[in-house]
Each structure stands twice: as structure tokens, then as C-alpha cells.
Image (spheres, rainbow, N blue to C red):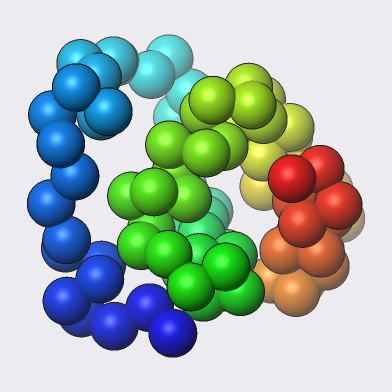
Length: 88
């Protein structure tokens, strides 16, 4: 389960890389949905959200993640999580 301790757990700096500015703009609701989905995915693997984000970035799945977030009509949180789980 992703607890507050795991959520803010520090990873070695070399694993995180340098922050990159994203050209994608998301609404507040989409950001909230993305955070919730990352938390559920991390809980399923019993890792921190940071590690899940690193895993998604490593497999170059963020474009798919963003397209699922912007999908219209909007899909539910669990549908989005299940779609991402299939890709991982």
C-alpha cells in the first residue's frame, strides 16, 4: 500500500534524472485523476509513486497515459488504471 512514507520516499538522484518541462497542459481535474491513478498503480506493485512514474517514463508510456487522461468521453479512474496496467 502506498503510504505517506512511501509517497515521499527519496530515490537516488541518478535514478530520477533531471526534471523536464512538459508542454502538456492538464486541468486540475485531470491532474487529480492522474495522481490517483499513479497511486493505485503503485499500490498494486507495492512501490512508491515516484518509482511508478520512473517505470512509466522508462517504458515511454507517458504519451499513452496523457491520451487516456484526455479521452472524451472521460473514462473512470479504474478503467484508466486497468488500461495502464495492461501496458506495463
